Length: 294
Image 1 (spheres, rainbow, N blue to C red):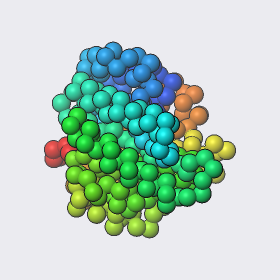
Image 2 (cartoon, rainbow, N blue to C red; image 1 turned 30 degrees about the vertical axis):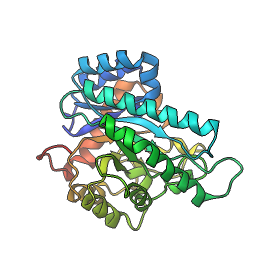
Image 3 (cartoon, helix red, strand yellow; image 1 turned 135 degrees about the vertical axis):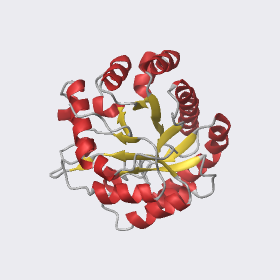
């Protein structure tokens, strides 16, 4: 098997069916040095146990997925959502402390879609702005960076009213870069004609908290949430986007995050091996390995 790139991080979604202990064991056993975790898996193990397992694995912690989903009108349901985000901030801080040196206290934030019964897209985005203003002081106190992830426009109605990197940067602008950053996920932003410009802006503002890679291939499946592929198996220009992200100054771990039923149905060790191979051929040739992580 090809030796894994030292900047490769396995996002746990790629091996969705592997429980936390197995995911950590297989990732470390493959020679990968970093992992991004999901809250449902952490909850299944309990936060103290998840932190213990992570510490024992020797892996860096690259992010926690996910917080957000705060496009809810003010009332009891919004209070529940905000309290859940506060728990996510606490979980991120504890996991980052448990990870190996170089771990990042990054909480990926997916905004949420248009509220049920509404057509007010602009109003939904203002709910995201209000939520960030409420959560940012608590994230700062915990040493956690909230990372806004723009999602492809096909998810605007039900998952994320933030569709472009520019929109994410506009929402992050009122806050310190160490408190609110952005995620550059190739699957979601590859199509954007403003992408190079906005990645450069993100670098100038020191906002890139995470770089995630996977590929886009058509036709899309009936469930478009499960449309992601290994790097190199689709049409995304990883050379250009990776060059832009590096020019912007990002030197951190790079997560491969894949939602794909066929990949989930393969043994997780096989998925990890294919991820190493795809990353090595599609992303690694365009990476700088030197430099401190950010």
